[in-house]
Length: 616
Image (tube, rainbow, N blue to C red; front, side):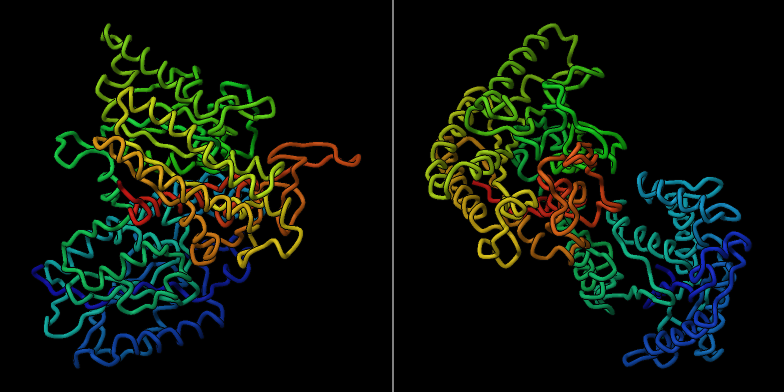
């Protein structure tokens, strides 16, 4: 840079406005003309004192300076006026009014009842991309903030501020809550999903981006981990901020899960010239990764509000949105997997196929099974899929619809199955009987893996099972006696069974590698990831760990086995509907059995760190 980098870039939200206190103000007064309340003025003065201490505190150069940028709205201008009282004129380089950092445009005069409906629609659509009628989306704000970035960097690069590089320079941007969060998103390259879980700034709160020892800006130089957690930053985002505090400018943090570097290490040999995103994926499992198989094959009803979060309609998934497998496919830059049995809409299988079906077990299905597609059946479905694909490829007319010939050897084979074998047994067997059955379950799993290997499979990605005793369905049924619960409020015996299964599954993975030295086998510890989420749910932005979002019955579990999510039944002469909660993003459990999209995203982000994967 030709110019001097500011020591700090500080983002401040305006003080309390009349619109913050009473939204009816927007019905008669244009948003840009709404002023601060008396409380807001006092907040701004107090914020100025705090800001002055940050900028002029211990360790600063004696002749430090500050440059202000301010939104043109009345409330931000008034906030800056009060903040500025704490600075002598010689300390202020200048003030620039900048319209590109104004508030998100919600439309013109805002009729309160109409805005309530509109904001409810925004929650269903997604906060980042929803565009207000006659107004803007957060994505629109992102675009103009990006343009402001260019001007900001030109101010620095061309030394337009004529600042002496021997003295500390500070940029203070007085703006709005959403605009400031967008600024942080743009600067730190956060994803849309990461942006959407950020908490808004309080009135006159500010965030300090300070230069670290290596020349990179970081929130962690000034702020504590506890503060960043309160703002909604995930542990991975906080880890990145800590890395930035000492990183050299221009360095790349390849440990960030959203950069996805480590995940690709498991897909192909390091000396393979193929781009890892070209890998095909073949998935086997149950409802944790069923993208529509049971619905397509059996006409199984997956009704609203399933799918409301991402697809806006039921997608065959037992979730409000995406599953773990969907996020992993995103990470590999591949489209979501089509279910094997779905023939509607010209499904494309060029990058793989999903054989997972809700309710499936590893052991062969019986008359009481929800799904006839046990693991062995899924394997035979794959063998038929493989044979037909190879036959079609001979004519070279269907290359764009089915996997390439070598994909059956180079592809990634993913497995997330076994929990239904254990969970189903809870209703008819003792813990000792369940533990005794694990060997037979894994022998059946081994038989299927062997068939896949004999037909070219070489890359095995195997998830263990999660803490079954923490599912609301299980706690509601088996946790009525407090003595059966652990310190997290989960039922102990199902978790003991899951742990025993996982120990033997990991031993099987080691055995598999010994039997097939040319295979790549990776064991993924889903149990630990999900247990950590249950134990520390509030740290990750969740408010409910063992209560279903979509269900009936209310606290503590909101689960009634007689009426599933989205369905209506007559119970004791009364019509009952299992409805969704208002905000599924703060719930771990979607329907008492399956996780929410938000929880699935968290689990996927932990998988992508590589910290829970053991390659053999």
